[in-house]
Length: 342
Image (cartoon, rainbow, N blue to C red; front, side, top):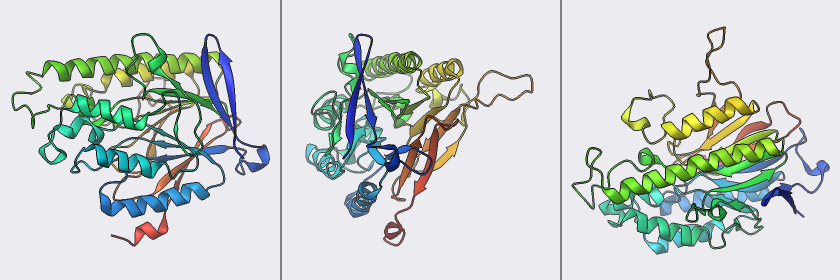
C-alpha cells in the first residue's frame, strides 16, 4: 500500500510522496512516475489510451502520473461533455494524477471546429473540471499538493502545483503551445493579430506569464531550502529551444526559459523539464548556459524529456533516485498492442 508523508517547510506545506519500502523500489533504488500527454486525441485513440492506463497501473514502481496537457485533439470540440469524459477516463488511474492544461484544452477553442468558444471561458471550465479539490490531485489514490492559488495575487492559478518526491522537487507550470497564448483568437475575432492584439487575450498571457515566473522562483527556493537532489518541472508547450530568441515563435517562452536557466545555473543540480506538444519522444540537453573556458555553452545539469503523443500512444517512466548523480532516469514504455492498431 502506498503511503503519504507531509513535510512542513517554513509557513507553507510541501507534500512528499514516499514508496512503501526500499525493497519495492526499482533495481537502482528509485521510485518512479509516469509521464504522458497529448492523449487521447479523438474517440479512436481512447481505446489505446485505456491500454496505456492498464500498463501504468500494472507498473510496480510508479507512484503517480503526470499529464502534460492536451486531453483532446486540436480538431475536437471543446464542449463540457468531452472535457468531462476525458477527466473521467483519467480516474481509471490507480495512482494520483497531476494535469497541466494544454493549448487544445482552452487556448485554441476559438477555432470554429472547436465550437468557437471564448478561450478564457474554456480555461475557467477546464479548471473547474480538472481541479475539483484545489490542492489535491485526481486519480484513485489522490495526494495533496501545494497549489499557487494559495499565494496572494495568484488565486486563479490552481493548476500550478508543487510537491516533493523521493528527494526531488516536482512542479507543474501553465505554459501552453500556440506561442503560450500569443497566437491570435482570429476565428472568433478576425481583427485580433500580433500587431493589434485583443486586450483580454494579451492581459491573460501577461498575467499567466507573471504567475509562471513567480512559481519557478518558488520551486527553486523550496528546492534550495530542502536541499533537494533535483527539480522536475512539467508544462505543455514545446518552447522551441531550436529557434533563436528573436524568432516570433519564441516570444511566448523567452522569459520562462531565461528564468529557468538562471535558476538551473544557480541550483547546480539536475533539472528535468518535461513537456509535450510536438508528439515526439526525446531526451536531450537543449539549453545553453554561461560560456565555459572550453567554449562549451551546453547547460549540463538541464535535461528535456518530451512525452509520446498521439498517434504514438505510449508512456514514459521516469525514475527518481537521490543517490544517482543524475537523479532522473528516463525509460520509454512501448504499449505493443498500440503499435498494430491504426
